[in-house]
Image (cartoon, rainbow over all chains, first blue to last red; front, side, top):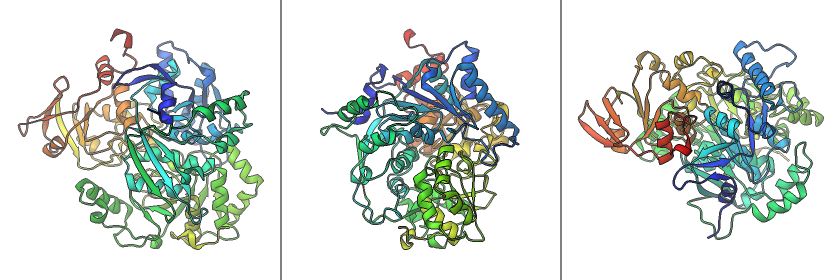
Length: 471
Length: 163
């Protein structure tokens, strides 16, 4: 019987194989950031261990870095200590670090592909759940906790239960690809399969709805695999993948021979078997807006807030979850999504802060001003994205519309730095999680695409971007 | 293991309510524990006792890979989380750092056990006993290596060559 892409990558990385139990898997790339690594380095020190492959380990600081003027000292003492600790650890253990002033600094999942560190067919781990982003390049990319970070630092391997392959097919053509985006595709998928729909699986996204997407859009899809509970998500590499990585800073010297190998090997066989299957038809899907406190609580922009009964379809915990979510979000069933007024807009995060996201959002706001009741910010995914956007004049478009134009980092996606919502504030956010308090205690998050966020900034409430001219 | 249950009758208890992002900079585990479950249950810190268990529904620990989540619960005194299912990163973090036992339960245990019930967990028998209600439930057994990592006391004490 044939094999899936995931199974091929898995099998080529087995160090010790166990049936029905975790296997020891070799790791090709380890990405490190300031928040989930300090205890791991401390563990190495306590046991007199070295980093086994510093040459395969790359670090940056993204989670708690300020996004304001970087020439000023960091006011938050604990953030400052965490950042200095990473600098010290990287120096001591010989790890390449893109520090706060590096032209290559940025969100770890944005810089990996940008620098050509992310490669097809590799295994990639990072102490961050959104490591699944790198799967867009046909890599097996997993988020891990700090104990596993230490294990990988020490041994370049992890014990991993073999996930089951899950095929998600995306079929059809979007009528307006500027208005209905990759974010809307992945939110639609999670809305359908639920936040636990992918638990214990590695998703392979397939179909013409996926191959049509650019690499940056594919990253948005794979990024949110974890929000469906999947261990990872990936997409078979194709010419778009190879073109994207060609000539980047760390792309290997023998790149073209690697491409030949990848073309032959990195695809699911026609007779391979998936253990689970779901198909989404995208011809008629609408822009999506989350209304609750997990990404599965999402509706079309043209719909109204569902009642907990409608949403739960008879499941009592789902009903209770929806009631609690509506209470937290201060929303009533029957309210049209387009009538929801917002206070803040955040365009950023590893989901949607790449150059293409900023280009698309800028088209919505060009020549306009944001609503006087809204405070809006753009936080580019990396220093490089910021620079490229500035070369295109996008910064001026955003600033002229009264957006704040910030330095790169995770920022308001998870509220670890000063960029947070105040209690009760409602935000249209291009990030990945709408959990209670995620963007600040009492803050209310609606997940949307960059164009939907930009349109909401202008109007002061959600609008169907399909009605706007985005050409 | 014997203790009392703190029950959250819901699915999808996420890492951001277990330990909100603003506290991920804290390195002192005792201090981290004072913020455990703060996003969901502000009274948690005042009511939790050493040896307590948490009981909840599906997909417990979904979201972030932050190991701070099981650490904060563990340093609050929680010895095990019983749930209908777990998000995988939380599950492995709990086991790898030997912070707490993630125990997958069946619907009858979820329905049968109430807040405050006293229960015992016997991992070798895969059995949960509800002393308060005089009921017994099955827990799903740990896989072989997960069981060995737990017995060893965490990932770094586990030596595959000795097993």
